[in-house]
Image 1: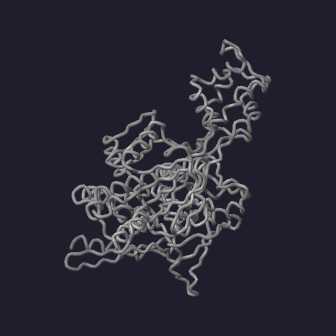
Image 2 (image 1 turned 45 degrees about the horizontal axis):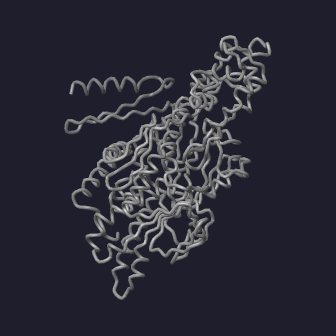
Image 3 (image 1 turned 180 degrees about the horizontal axis):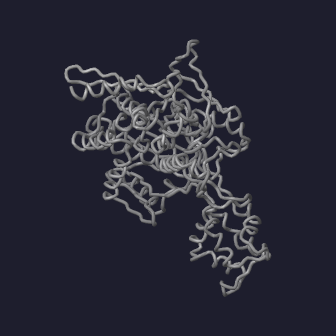
Amino acid sequence: MRFTAFALDRASQALRRGPSISKLVVLFAVSSGGLVAYADSRLDNGVEVSQGPPKKKVVVLGTGWAGTSFLKNLDTSLYDVQVVSPRNYFAFTPLLPSVTCGTVEARSIVEPIRNIVKKKNGQVKFWEAECFKIDPTKKKVFCRSNIGTNLDGNGEFDVDYDYLVVALGAKANTFNTPGVEENCHFLKEIEDAQKIRRSVMDCFERACLPNLSDEEREKNLHFVVVGGGPTGVEFAAELHDYVSEDLAKLYPTVKDLVKISVIEAGEHILTMFDKRITKFAEEKFQRDGIDVKTNFKVVKVSNKAITMTNPSTGEISVPYGMAVWSTGIGTRPVMLDLMKEVGQASRRVLATDEWLRVLGSNDVYALGDCATISQRKVMEDISEIFKVADKDNSGTLTVKEIKEVLDDICIRYPQVELYLKTMQMKDFSYLLKDSSGNGNKDSIELNIEEFKKALANVDSQVKNLPATAQVAAQQGQYLAQCFNKMKQCEENPEGPRRIREPGRHRFRPFRYRHLGQFAPLGGEQTAAQLPGDWISIGHSSQWLWYSVYASKQVSWRTRMLVVSDWTRRFIFGRDSSCI
């Protein structure tokens, strides 16, 4: 009570003060021992205190690996962040093959995007809608909601932006093969995995119907996977385990009629892995009875058969019950339109620079599967590099002069460092020694032509990054860090020196760090290819796969759900209901 009386006295003194100062009105009410306070931060004339300049508006398109990684790492208190995506969740796509066979439930690998953004500082707006047009000139994105919230019922709206982050992913690439869209399943979204799961069970139930011939039963139980990449191989392995460990007990009369085929246009499956893994996978599939058809190109898919060609056998048609198409990625229509807007109509995929900015539009960034980094070639800037290094304008470069700019060159052109490693050269001077023919590297002096000769083969190491979740996640994290320190880096740039202009770049270019890759091959065996050319194949790698995939979940909720699903599967087996 003494504190309340004291506070009321101080409040009355504040109210008696002149109107020239800000008024703080404090109202106290004591009820059942409780104390309530209210503060009015307005000035006497009713004008609010200035909140500073408006925040830059960042619009994020997509909630996949790239978009979600960007949101999780972005300091959202610095920007007005708005997210647009046709799905209101993030899906852990590497486990989609497990969802197709009931090893993991669909809801166990998805996290609502609002659960993620509610933990961020500042308010993040989210709209469940699909972007169908991007106008980089007017800085607008045009969206359409399937739930039609507008008064006129069409569900269309547009959003302005200061910075646009495009992370729309990609669609399945059918290579315009007739019948694929109508008759094949894809495996890129949660909905795809759920459809495949129901289709597998339908094939078994259909094969058990009476009055069917053995030929019709074999057709229904022939599962075809088109594409021998990681997704196709993992699905084939998951399906084989599902059939042999669970469905064979439930459908004993038709278990011997099941056939799984993997069709690959190349000479081997898993060509992006080490040859030792490719060989092991092919041999294991042969032992498991999975038919691997290499050098076969699918030319047509009907609702009854898949037609393919091979140089030795010619064209053949194979009847099937279910087909899964997993042959790579294609560009979405909205991205094709954007490429025309920014002068990239002749390209097959949207190109960005090493800072993930779309070429031809400074305020638009693209990351993940919808874009590729167009690494600047050394030979395009070779004359400018020579001028920057030749500080005394002597017309020749010494090893000392090159070493002074070498760090900036390696940061700006990572292919230089990669080329040195590939050629097993200790440092840049060995490359110069080979070019000049001078045995004493310390006395080397190169003119412009000799310098060009030394770097002539460096650009051969430029390679496009793979379209994987690992690349997308790292790009999202990198771009968020750039946005977080954008203001300070404008004043104190941390990137390499500019070659064609004075000064330095604001940020260091994106550099992908490969952390390894897995190929689950069924039977609790997984092939792992880790940095340092370390190859591990077998049951121990399977447990490493379990631990890595559990730790990479975006929340403790999904982590616990995935682990519980794996535990349930070990104890009770996989679920075979058609839901």
